[in-house]
Image 1 (cartoon, rainbow, N blue to C red):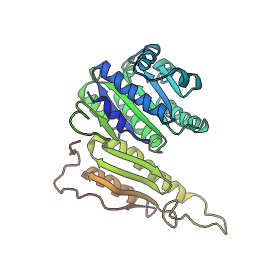
Image 2: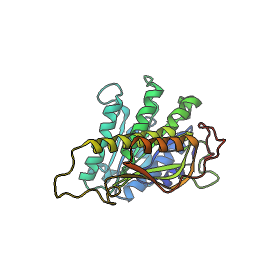
Image 3: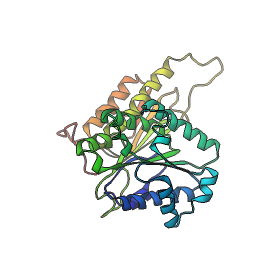
Image 4: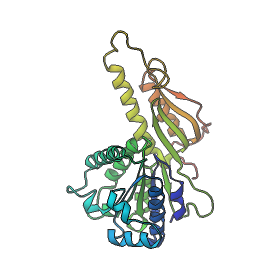
Amino acid sequence: MADPTTVDRLLPGDHVCWTFDDHERHLRALVRFVRTGLAHGDQVLYFTDTFLPPAFLAAAQAYGVEVRQPLSTGQLRVTGADGSYLASGPFEPERALKGWTTAIDQARADGYGGLRVAADMGWTVRPVVDVDRLARYEAQANQIFSGGYAMALCCYDRRLFTHAELERISAAHPGAATAGAGSLEEWAPLLRMRRTPRGLVLNGAADRTNAEALAAVVEPLVTEVLAADASPAPAAGHTSHTSDDGDAGGAVVIDVTGLTFADLATARLLAGAVEAAAGRLRLEGSLPDVPAALDPGGARDS
């Protein structure tokens, strides 16, 4: 499983698939995640499926995290799946996604510096949630987390999912901390995606291991660009967009300056987005060299 210290590397906007097969190390990672969030003045939500909420809170207290005061103010909330994902009945991705937007809006309104979410995902096997449906939900969540205010640590017990299922789910996250991550060298999410007033900034590496996550952010951006292009022209006297909100004339930018690796499928995705946006979207910076012989399904070692 991933080393518990990997959670220290998370930044606002990150959305990570974190796998485990040892409850003690899982607990240590969660405690680190909660402790750091509380110290930073973030609101911290933990949706547990591994530990009963009172047991987790007692363990966190034993590890030196003062939980009573943050619980009383609402800065810390710990609940099970029945009180979160399944609170209104069977899992509905659209309802869950709206819930994240609502939680972010509420955390902002309450004055928190950010929102940290840790979620045990074992509940998805009781009853079984279709893996493709789950992966699509995880991918769509990137549209929310890439806003840069919230971060999400999605905890998957490797003993409950097949290798193929975890690969499918992992590709819906920009980064994954899998077996051995952080043990021998410093770990960071493979890809970071951040929405900005100008468009989208990409940093890190993009390959098949995060392909669905990237597509889930890039494709809606094209839709937004085309929708804005179809909207009524500004009234007389109004100026066009400036570089603070895209390029002059309203063009939206995908900044790839920080990409260290992009496979052929990523290059095709971004080129297709530029073409589909018909001049209203451009790339800033150059993509790393894509080997001509690289198969679209090839992956870079993480």
